[in-house]
Amino acid sequence: MELKRVVVTGLGALTPIGNTKDEFWEGLVSGKSGAAPITYYDTEKFKTKFACEVKNFNATDFLDRKEARKMDKFAQYAMVASDEAIADAKLNLDEVNKLRVGVIWGAGIGGLETFQQEVLGFADGDGTPRFNPFFIPKMIADIAPANISIKHGFMGPNYTTVSACASSANAMFDALNSIRLGYCDVVVTGGSEAAVTIAGMGGFNAMHALSTRNESPETASRPFDGTRDGFVLGEGAGALILEEYEHAKARGAKIYAEVAGGGLSSDAHHMTAPHPEGIGVVEVMKNCLENANLKPEDIDHINTHGTSTPLGDVAELKAISKVFGDHAKHININSTKSMTGHLLGAAGAIEAISVILAMEHGIVPPTINHTTVDEKIDPELNLTLNKAQKRDVKVAMSNTFGFGGHNACVVFKKID
Image (cartoon, rainbow, N blue to C red; front, side):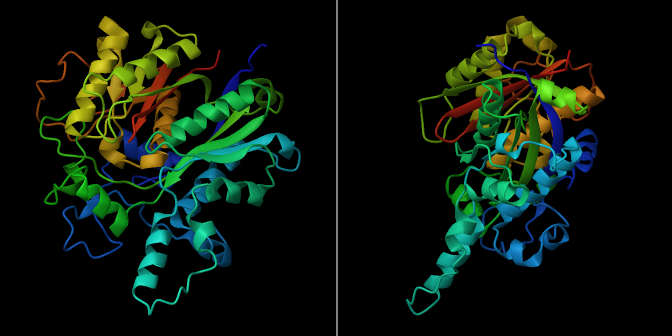
């Protein structure tokens, strides 16, 4: 069976550094930090008092007030980003065969704020279970793609992938295969997360996973830096329209890039820590290259998982050196989490958008906040430190890894 070609025809982003894909891109190339003191709740007793929140967002600017109240913030974010992507793709919803349009979404946690509110509300009461009738539908992780499909009438495959921080990269790979194998003509894919809550921050603090650089939030996310002390939690959504190539060409769609392939693997090592030698990461990048029928020397740019944790950054760069050998020195490597923070289940989607826009504009966004060399990191690697670099990016890879050892990798290339 000959696999169908798959292309990207629409993008949408709602992030801590920009509320549209164009604002997001401007934030990336200018080296903008999305980190700031948390505004959602009183942080006085919390170890970490900052995060990368989405700014100036009001759901009712985009959604009917009644409908918005039925959605957790992570689902609201999904609706806004997917609407932008659908509009960007110029899909004619009156003409497209909605039986062949799927929605495959990623979320690592889902409606954490809703769960928190309902349980705390019960705990503060007299023991009578007075729960909101929308508690469960607002909380469950699969409700974001459900809401997208209900709004637009898309009747193809519809589900959420949950693999922690690899969730939306998993979703993109599933979307790719749904079109490759002929099950769909179009898939709305991506991911969303809204975990900047007392439960989210408190839980990650208890794991010692977050930076505690409270005196300087904007510099706290510092991937590859010798003084990094943990990741910065972010929130938001990224959406991509994947489309069968001939279908896109027939309707005269703008094509951003071709989805060349993807890969999956597991560390099979630890609940939260990466394998110190990056064994699973080596395998996922090899799998991705093989799936895309590409050679290591074809890769121009890698947006790393690069969370700014002491162990993870080193393990990933070791893996890149193993897979790419001497060519690793010629790749523009970066971590956009230095600006956006870590969007958990949405990370893979917004980082895929970053590499696609890097191809379109010929610019690789920087890894900001680097001030101190880490002697465990190969100094010959080009980590695109502190300033964007011009580069003709023909092929770009995006790495995303999740707690539990879940590894996902997607690679894009300029359309032939």
